[in-house]
Every structure is written in structure tokens, then in C-alpha cells.
Length: 268
Ligand SMILES: NC(=O)c1ccc[n+]([C@@H]2O[C@H](COP(=O)([O-])OP(=O)(O)OC[C@H]3O[C@@H](n4cnc5c(N)ncnc54)[C@H](OP(=O)(O)O)[C@@H]3O)[C@@H](O)[C@H]2O)c1
Image (cartoon, rainbow, N blue to C red; front, side):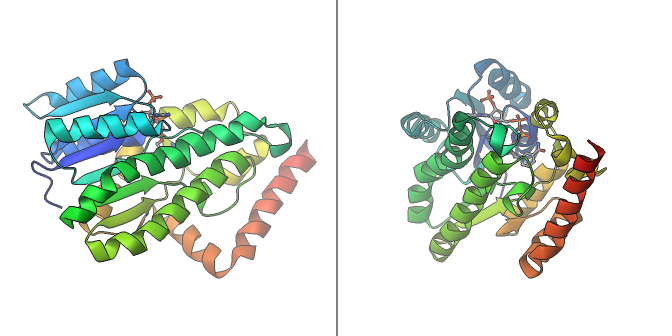
């Protein structure tokens, strides 16, 4: 994609991976529309990235609200023109054991992580298809590739994001629109810091001693994914290997994860 002057929309653009994508796109000369709920953080990021005369707009919006998303996307197009790339990074997580989780947790993950990816795509895809150009990237997770202890709510929503994007790719590719799905492992963001206190010990043991990636590394992978029109976007070798191994030999990870869970439970 030619980034200079392109209109890039980033949901969740006020923090973490979305903010890093926004920074990278701004550094390449893109015009930006950032969506998130909290207006203060959004305004602060938009102001910082506007330095140097770039056009950056922050529009407060809950991505799980279909009407609100349609309204702000319409405003973004009116202000900055047709959208060249959409990156759906807005998301929430709340790890916990299935037997201890409340029903609302399952609903919230699907509302924000799945529908919050679907509604922005529904708002931009018709125009991209009509113009036969554009790029749509959603952010799933390593927990959208394999079942992980403590992520029955989050993982289900992230598997749904993957299913949506894989199916959508087959329909939009012939129309000239790129669709990609990013699978980050643990990434050093406010989300990861907030979820730590809720993570069961078994979930931590599965992650092991792997260090979280910097958000900038995921942003670079997403930008490369857009440039090369990749259907699957990985920011690290380990997650790429996980995706390949799980497809070929799912029992390998089941045995490994079950062993780690067993160890933690035996240790009490
Ligand atoms: N960090 C990780 O380890 C990791 C790993 C794999 C995948 N991911 C995925 O990567 C994406 C970004 O995560 P992150 O770590 O960058 O999280 P983050 O730092 O918490 O940022 C999340 C962003 O999403 C926005 N957001 C949350 N709920 C929203 C809603 N209902 N409507 C609109 N905006 C909303 C937040 O702003 P407001 O709260 O102001 O709305 C914020 O801008 C998520 O989809 C996450 O599941 C993260």
C-alpha cells in the first residue's frame, strides 16, 4: 500500500497494539482515524500524532455498537475521504476458569472482540469492494489458534475473529480487497498488565518464561502484512510455528499444555 496520504482507520487506536499501528502509519505519512471509547486517551494520542501537520482524528465510539460504528465511519469518510486500510485492534480480555466465570464475561468478549471487529468491517467493506482496493486486518491472538486454559471466553471470541477473516478473505480477494488476520502472542500493553492479576496459575504456566513482545513489533508485522497482502500475520517465529504445528499435530500442544496444567495443580 502507498501509505503517504492513505486514510487508515485503527480501532483501539488509543492504546497498546492499535496505538503502535497508528504511530507507524503516521510515520509513513498516512492520515488517521482512531476509534476507542475513552475520549481523553484518544484525544491525547491524536494530538501527539498530529504533530508535524498530519491529519489525525480521534472519534469516541464503542465498537460493539453497530449504529455508532456506522455513524463514526461515515464521519471519518466525510472528513478524510475513502478508507484505504482498516485495522481492528479494539479488544478486551478477562482470563479465568470456566467453572468460576459469569455468563456476562462470555457475552462481553463476543460483543467487543468479535462484533467489535465485525461492525467496522461491515461499515468499510462495501466501499472497498466497490473501489476494488483496500486492506482489512483484524487482531485475533495465539489464543485464537489453540485452546488455552483460562481463555474459554476470550479464546472463543478470538477463534470467531479468525473464522470471520478467513471466510471473508475468500470473498473479498477476488474483489481486490486484502483481508488479513494477526495472531499476537503476549504483547507488552496495558491489556496484558491488567489481565495478569486475573490469570489462573495454570494459564501463566502455559505462557512459561516467554517474554512479551513490544507492541511496535506487532505493528510492524501488521504493516508488512498490509504491504504484502498476507492472509496470516505473525509477529514472532514461535507463534508462526505454533500455527503450523497445531494444524499438523494438534495432540503435541494438548499434551504439552496438559502436562504444564498438571504440574501446577500437583504443586497446589
Ligand atoms: N496484549 C496482548 O498480550 C495481546 C495478545 C494477543 C492479542 N491481543 C489483542 O490485541 C488487541 C489490542 O490489545 P492491546 O493489548 O493493545 O490492548 P489495550 O492496550 O488494552 O488496548 C485496547 C484498545 O481497545 C479499545 N477498546 C476496548 N474496548 C473497546 C470498545 N468496546 N470499543 C472501542 N474501543 C475499545 C481501548 O480503548 P477504550 O478502553 O478507551 O475503549 C484501547 O484503545 C486486542 O484485540 C487484543 O485481544 C493482545
